[in-house]
Length: 249
Ligand code: ZN
Image 1 (tube, rainbow, N blue to C red):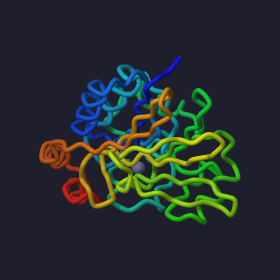
Image 2 (cartoon, rainbow, N blue to C red; image 1 turned 135 degrees about the horizontal axis):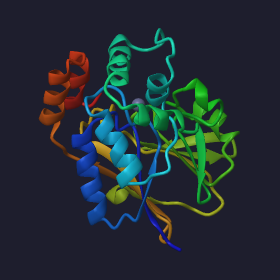
Image 3 (cartoon, rainbow, N blue to C red; image 1 turned 120 degrees about the vertical axis):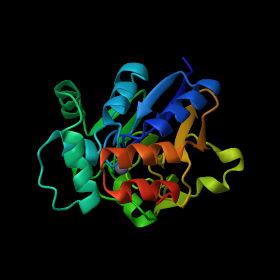
């Protein structure tokens, strides 16, 4: 049966941005949700975002690095100090039940012939960042399905497997933000970030995949950045978490 998937990730406890995405998706006929992880971290509404993804969207979810570091008392030395501070804050502001749910998230997940991962399929728990075609080529060695969706860099992009490795496509160059998945090809698609975009565009990013038309549409939505910033500041989170939301980095 044909489905219209809303695929979202890197929500990062930004309920203002998430609400706008969910409303938009309803108006675009989304029937099912998929989440590429990092529901928590950086911003002030982790419980609200966990409950929305788990109980309302009922999305299959993979574990992001912030979800992982919140759920397991890992050494935070590798994290930027502001990110680490937000991880510590988040641990104090979610319920035991929500913490258990974060611990239950898998690193990778198959969904209807697609694959989900937060970072890369080569060593998903090493949280490598894919910023170029060479790094994408290493990932493609491990991608077995035609489509794999991910996040982590907070920059929307499509990587396509080629005979010699991989090539990228910038979604801003797609007419109407849309491209068609061709048979026999493999794509590794970064859906961007709902709650903290980093491509210089502060609008929330997510993707709609229509299994009937085989089209992937990249969507960007303005949201109430001032509201999210006010929540972050009232929560006592590092100023950098609030400040970066208005510049999209
Ligand atoms: Zn993230």
